[in-house]
Length: 102
Ligand SMILES: [Zn+2]
Ligand SMILES: [Zn+2]
Image (tube, rainbow, N blue to C red):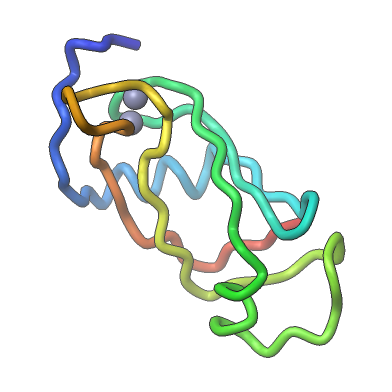
């Protein structure tokens, strides 16, 4: 909850585990979205996953807003807050496994 958290690109296993447990993953307009509070900086973050990425990741027969399942989803903080003069998001990222958008 603190803008004093400085921008730093790093991956942390706990960060990914918390994302997996606390974020919501859902079909949305034109694709899929996931949202929740970044465990590192505490800001709310909402990210859209484009159809192209999902179609590359899995063989998809259905159009949104059908649920989809991804074995791996790269997630980064995109909270929109400036954690450095030219950077938004705090830089935390991880791969989240077995994500169901439903
Ligand atoms: Zn933030
Ligand atoms: Zn963050």
